[in-house]
Length: 508
Image 1: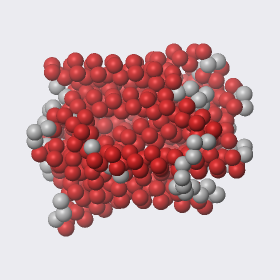
Image 2 (image 1 turned 90 degrees about the horizontal axis):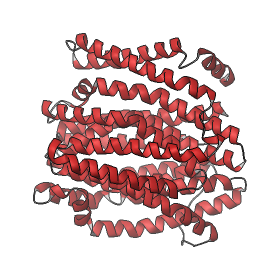
Image 3 (image 1 turned 90 degrees about the vertical axis):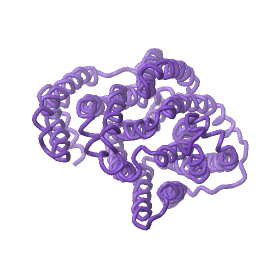
C-alpha cells in the first residue's frame, strides 16, 4: 500500500515537475518580452480571474467534495458512473451561466481584483483580455472533474500531464506571436481558452478509453446530487475564502507599479516545489484516505497520512531553505533579460524569500486537509479558512503603506501558518489515522537538521560562485545543494538506506 502511494506521488510529481519546467520557459519568454509593464500586468490579472474561480469551483471546492463520495461508490461501477455523469452535467450547466455573467461583468471583476488599475491603460487591457480568457473556467473545471474520476480509479498520468500541454501551447503561441509581429497580450489571451479545450480533450479521451464516457446532459437534482451539494457548499465557501486571500494580495500589489508582475513571477518559482509535492500528495492521498476510512482501516489510514507527510517534508523543507538562500541568483538567471531589469530582479527575489518561508505551510495544508475531506467534513476547514483570511487581510493592508507591496507576500505566508496550526489542532480528535507514526517521528527532526545544514553550505558556496556565469552559478548551487542534502539525509538516517533498498526490492 505504501509503495502504491509512493508510485502515485512520483507519477503526479514527475508530470507536475515537467509542467513547472515548461511553465518556467513560458514565464521566461513572457518576462523577456513583456517585463513587468502594463501588458504583462493586465494579462496576469485577466488570467488570474478564471484561475481563481477554477480553484473555487473545481480543484478546490467541487473536487474535494466529489472525489471522496465518488471513491466510495466505486464498489458499484454502475452507481459510480451515474453519479459522475450527474456531477459532470451539473457542473457544466452552472459554469455555462457563470461564464456568460462573468464576461458581461468583467469591469467589475477587474476592479475587485486590481482596483489600482483604474484610471490607467492597465484597466482597459485587463477587461479586454479578461473577456477572452474567462471561458477557460468552464473548460478547465470540467477537465479537473474528469481528472478526479481518473485519480479515484488510480489513473494519474493524463490529468497530471494536461498542464504540460497548456504550457507548450502557450510557448508556441508566444513564439509565433513574437516573430510574426502579433499583439502579444491578445495572443496570450486567445491562447488561454485554446489550452482549455486541449486539456479537456486529453483527460476526456483518457477517461473514455477506460470506460468513463461523460457527456453534458440536462442536470438533475437527485439524492446523490443533493448530498454532493451539502458537502460541497462549505467547501465552496472555504474555496472562496482562499481566493479572497489571493485577491487581497493582488489588490495590494495593484497600487504599486510592477508589483503584480513581481508577485506573479515569485509565485511561479515557489510553486515549483509546492506544485510537485503538494499537488502529488493531495491528488493521491484524498481517494486513498477515503477508501481506508470507509473500510475502518485506521492503521492503513495512519500509514497513508504518515508517508504523505514524510514525502512532503523530505522534499519541501530543503526546498524552502534553499530558495530563501539563493533567491537572487534564481530570479536573475531565469528572468533578468530583455524587458526584465535588475530592479525587477531585486523586488521579485524579496517576494520569493517571503513566500519560501511559507512553503512548508502551503504543503502541510495539502497533507492535513484530506483528513477532513475524506470524512466529508468541509465545514471545519471553512471555519479555519475564515480565520486565516482575517489574518491575511489585517497583515497585508496593515503593512502595505509602511513596507510596500511585500506586505501582500507577508500576509499570505503568515495566514498559511495560521491555517496549518488550526488544521493540526483540529486533527487531535480524529484518532490514530491522524497521528504521525514512529517512522515519521524519527525522520522529521532529521529532515529539518539536514535542511538547515544544507542552507548553511549554500550560503558559503555563494561566496565563490558569484564570479561564475549566471547559468553555471545556479546549476552549481542547485545540484550542489541537492547532493549535500541527500548525503546528509543518508548520513543522519533522515532517508534510511534500508527503507530505500526495501522499496526497490518490492518494485522488482
